[in-house]
Amino acid sequence: MDTAMLHSCEENYFPDCSIYSECIEAVFIYDKDGRIIACNRSAREELGYDGQNESIMSAFPKVFYKRNDELCLLDGIREDMLFDTVAYRKNMTCYPAMVKILKDKKTDYYICFAQNMSNENAAMKKMVSLEGKLKNAIQVKNEFIANITHELRTPVNGMKGFAQSLQKTKLDPAQQENVEYILHCCTNMEGLINQLLDFSKMEAGKVTLEKREFDFYHFIEETLALNLPQINEKGLRVRISIGKKIPQIVIGDEFRLGQIINNLFSNAVKFTQAGTISFEVVNTAQNGKEIELFFVVCDTGIGIAREDMDKLFNSFTQVDSSITRRFGGTGLGLAICKQLVEQMDGDIYVNSELGKGSTFSFSVRLDLPGNEKEEGEKEAEGFSTQWSQRLKEYMSVSESESSEEDTLKLMREKLERVLLCIELGTWEKADKFAGMMKAAMPDTMQELKREVFRLELMIRREDYDLSLQQVKKIQDKIES
Ligand code: ADP
Image (tube, rainbow, N blue to C red; front, side, top):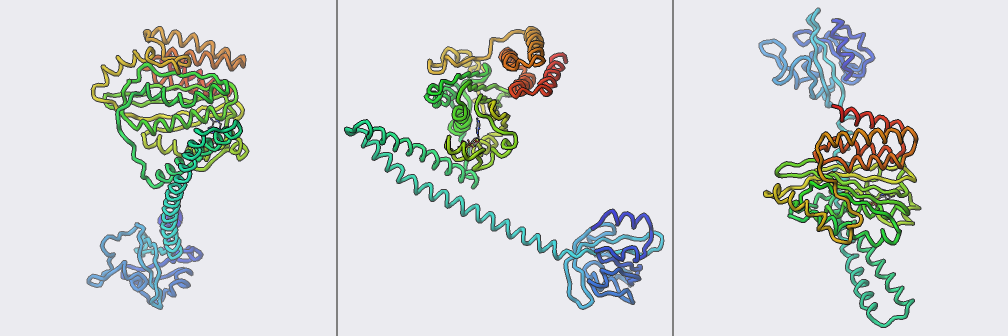
């Protein structure tokens, strides 16, 4: 109903049906006894009333009743409110209506507006029915995927087993190569099947996360090491930085967290031909029971166009089919990551520029064991020495702590240089100084650290205006 019109009616105090003649709602003007004084064209055409010796009660029997000859509104209905009821035509057929009754303060007449809701109700019914059908279709699709992937697993396992047996027999070099190719295909196929299974389980809300204690440092090492062969093969540089204040033992779903990191890290490796992949994790919030970790995976690869970034976390999305042909994949990895991150009470973001590289960042919350405080910090300190040879060369653990004043002084100095580099357009140097700022900051300055993270992203996108704005923001924060 057009509420603007209703208001103007109230303000004008003019119960003259001619002003409502073209309005699409049926409008009746009636007196305190319920006798219709006038009605508009809709009321005449839709309900068959003509305003001659008729009662408003006949049109809306479920709204009014008479007590000692006095016209009253049924319980729960008041003047000035919108309510659903049934409007009866003169011929006793009816339709659902939304009604409002106003009192004309000058004349003591009442105005009743009634909108025919048949079409809206039919549309609503259709929507509810479509929603049901859609839910059903999604369930059928998920069951289909679950069944078919399960069925596919058996032959793939068979092929893999036979290829492995064949590998142990005497083969000439060409045969050996072929068998290796078969094994490689089987591994890819297994990956696809697992992703599809995961995805259908998630859509059905059937993925529950485990809560088990695990050694965070060992976990990171094992997860990142999975990609070392491809990294070495491509000759990429790797930088790994682990915040010093992260306790060694945390509680959560190690397998699923590993899945997220591995997906992002392996994508970074997959889509980067030359340059650096960096992996960073810092502790952004902690209390006695919980810890929030912020992960950043950054590459100098092919990048993603701005218009494609929003779609990335949707299922089956790949930026470009030629890329898919070249690199393979299902387009499900990031959709799965997003769902897992959300289940771990976090968010995932991407920042990227075509041809320059991409930065994926996400946060998760993990539980801490009861005795975490003393033990965690003690063991974390020993971590850099425990770090095995495999990744040690890539590692940097946040620098040792200095006083807050010293840090702020250092920050001011570095920020000056960043600013100069931005002004000169020497982006690589600006990036380096921003990196130094970040490394110099203790985990207690998390908010500032996030701002420096953002600055780094803007510098990598070589965005002059945004970088300057961000420098200003950081300057203000340092001085406040
Ligand atoms: P896929 O299994 O196809 O890799 P993902 O969901 O992990 O599925 O990624 C979807 C698409 O997002 C990829 O096909 C690629 O086009 C794009 N993408 C993901 N990560 C990167 C990255 N680091 N650099 C460039 N493009 C990326």
